Structure formats: C-alpha cells, structure tokens
Length: 262
Length: 219
Image (tube, rainbow over all chains, first blue to last red; front, top):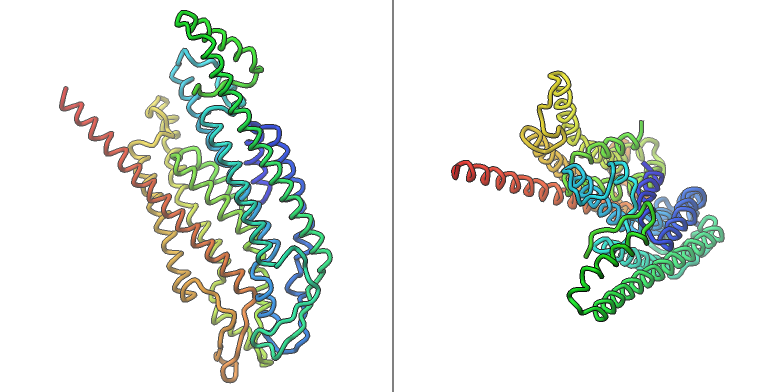
C-alpha cells in the first residue's frame, strides 16, 4: 500500500475529467507525489539525527526539535496530498454508482438501454452533466479549500517558507539559551519553495477548471432558455425534441454516452 | 507480504458491500492505511534511539523506554488496522461457500450468491458488529496503556538500574500526538459508519419482512 495504489484509484477518475482536470492530475503525480517520494523524503530523512544543539544537556535537543518542528514539513505535505486527492474519490464513487445502475437496467432487459453488452458499460465515459456535474464541481471546490488550508497552516507554523540555519532555543531543560543548527537548510528551503509553487499552480488549475465548468453550465442554460423561447408552439415540441436528440447523438463520439437527463 | 495484501483483500470485500460499506473501505484506505504508510511510520521509526535520559547509567534508558512504552503506538496502530479489516473476510468466505454449494448441486440455489439476504445478511451483520467491537477495544487499549491520548515530552523514571528519579525525554511528542488524534478521529468515524450501516440494514430488512408478511395476510 503506497502512493501507487492512490495512482490506480485516481487514474480511473482521469477518464471522466475535463482536460484541465487531467492536467491537474498529471501535475499532482509528477511534480508533487513523485518529488515527495523520490527526493524530498531523503532530504528530510535525517532531520532529527542531524539537528545539533550546542549543549551536552541530555534532552535539550529533543525538546528544542519538538518546539521548532511540531509537525515535520514532509508529513504535512503527505497529509496535504492525501486530503487533496480525496475529493476525486467522490467522483469515482458517483461514476461507479451510475455504472451500477446502467448494469442493472441492462440486466433487467430494459429496451431503453442503448448498450449491446456489459463490457460497453464498463468502458464508457460519462459526460459531466446533471448530478455528476454537481459532484465534480463540489470535489474541485473541496480540493481548493484543502489546498488553501494547508498552505496557510504551513505559513502559520513555520513563519514563512524559509528554513533558518540557526535557531535559538531556551526551552527547559536547556540551560540558558542554546544554539541549535538545522541540517541542510538551503536544500530544504529550495524544496519548500518548489512544493509551494506547485501547490499554487494546482490552485490556479482548480480555479480555472471551476470557471470553465460554471461558464459551460450557464451557457448551456441560456441556450436551453433561448431555444424554449423561440418555439412556444406546442405542435413543434415533438419535432424540437427529436432535433435535440439527433443533435446530441451526433455530438457524442463512439465512447461517450449522455448521462441522466435533467 | 505487505500492506498490499490488505489492500487487495479490502478491494475484494468491496464487491459485496453496501454503499456505506464502500465509503468505509475508502476511509480505511485513504485516511488510515495510506496515512500510516506514507507518514506515521516514519515518525516512530527511530523512537528508541531518540529516547534520551539524563543519566549515564548503562541499561537505564532501555529499562525506562520499556516501562513507558510496553507496546509502541505504531505497532498498536498496525494491529488495529489488520484486526479491523479481518471480519470482512467472513462475508467473502460465506459467498465462496454459497458459490461452492451451487457448483456441487449443479443448479441455481440462490438468485445471486453475492446478494445480501438470508444467511449472508446474518454474516454481514456479525462482521459489522465485530469490526465495531474491535475498533472500540483498540481505542480503550490506547487510552488505558498511555493514560489518555497525550504524549508528554518528559517522563520521570525510577526503575532499577536507574539510581533515583531520572528525566527521560521523548522525541517528537507533538507530531506523535497530532497523528494519534488523527488515528482516534478516523477510528471514531469508522465506528459511526459501521453503526449507521448496521442500523440501515436492520431497518431495511425489517421493513421488507413486515411488507412480505402484510402481503401474505392480504392474500
């Protein structure tokens, strides 16, 4: 069980995401999780062993380390990545639920069902419409909130994003004020800034995706409103419906299927 | 043999679960297993080396560490994860038994061997009760062993061979406490999910039973 399992779970969600969502997922895996596992963990690996204090007093080093690092950067990033990935699970669950319903329809032998076999249902890609739109938008919203909360927590806990070389500690049992030296401060600062930069990029991507989804939603709504205003005639209603259906069928490619009609 | 085995096991169980059961599996994966492997394990990695006592007496540090940490938090956490996931195996075994029976008799005995009805419902309910019980047992164990969910930064030790009372300092107590609270919170969430699933199933099937009886009476 490791980040690979997360990759498998989220990879499934990738199929039903927008293009911006796919970019976000790529950035998440390559520039955050991979960097965390391959590089950052090594940099912080010896953080307590090489945290040296200028005193022989036993216990002083432990206490000072605990005072300046209530929760290590690396653990905070790991938690941030886990929390930020979790909303995508909501989308995965919703898609799985829809698939389950379609499979049930198919098994009942419903004539309305458009599929030829169960494999088609398994492979199909759902469009982001109807209730799936709400789940997807909600998941992006939560992602944004989690990213922002963790960035703020980081800034608040460590007074900015720089790792100082020297910390002055006067917690008991250290006698007087003691100089404590952090290991690899420059390398840690570089990685901290890198991770913060990529977090900001992810926030921007999420905001862009949210705007895109909202714009699409309002455009679709105004189109529908416009269409209904132009044809108030009751006799033409069936024709309009047929036209819409034909449009929708011709729009969607082989592998996409229209979701639940609202 | 590693956590991947548990992951595969839980994925298998997912097939026969209700909706709430699937949410429970997702919570166990993301917030317990993944956090354990990706973050928590490393915090407790060098806990013995980093445990420092203000004394040069040989053996005193070892004895004090053993006195204050009979079983390490991280090992209890791992045991809890394993024990809590295991009752789901009962459901898998029961379904396998049903499928085996169908094969032996060479006829369709059940509408769908994976459907939660009849005997399988009983097994499912028992697995839920066991899961909840084990979660509570481990939470109580944590509480009793460590006097609440606090981790002090200093413990005073006067076990032989330490002469007099000796100050011993625990490493990373704040970080350990944060993750301990996280563990407790996720355990409580899982208990709530199990209890809601239990009530949902009992409610659903009592209504079903009642309606069946009602229809029979009408006929």
